[in-house]
Image (cartoon, rainbow, N blue to C red; front, side, top):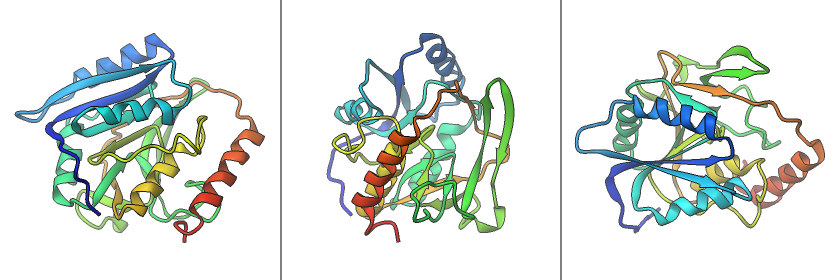
Length: 232
C-alpha cells in the first residue's frame, strides 16, 4: 500500500464533469463559500465533453493536488467546514483513501451499494423537484467521533487523498464507475470513510433521466465479473 507520487499537499482540487453551465456555476458558488484551512488553496478542474465519468476524472490525475474532490455538477456543498473536516479524517488515518457522503460499510454481492442494511450517511436529494432528506446515519456504528469506514460510496461526491486510475477500460458510461473506484482503493490496501454529519453536508439536485435498465445491468455484470474476488 504505497503511493509514491509527489503531491501538492496544500491544495484541494474540485473535479467536475460539466454539460450544464448553470448548474456548474451554482456548484462553484457553494464551493466559493467554504472555509479554506490556513495555508491551503482550492482549484477547479471543469471537464467538458467527457465521453464517460472515468475518462473525465482520469484527466485530473495529471494534477499534483493531494486532495481531489470529484463531484457531480448538480451537487452543492453547504457544510461550511467541509474542507477542514475531510482533511482531519484523511490526516487522522493514512489508510483512508476516499471519503463519500453516502454509501455502505459492506458492499452486497449484487454490487449495488444501497441494497444492504449497512447503508450509511446522509444527503438532501431533489428528484422531480421533490425534496428528500435521505438519512441513513447510524451513529452507534461510527468507529470514531468523526467517521465510519465504508467499502463503497455514491459517486455524487468522492474525495480522495491518493491517485488511482479510474477504470476507463471497463466503465465507459455513467454506471458503477463509483463502486469500481472504491474497490480499486480496497485492492490497493486503502479504506473508505463516511463522515458523521450533524447537519446535511450536501444537496444533490438530481435532474431525472430515464435509466436504460439493460445498460445498467451490463455494467453491473462487468463489476461483478471483474471484482468477484474483492466483493466478499
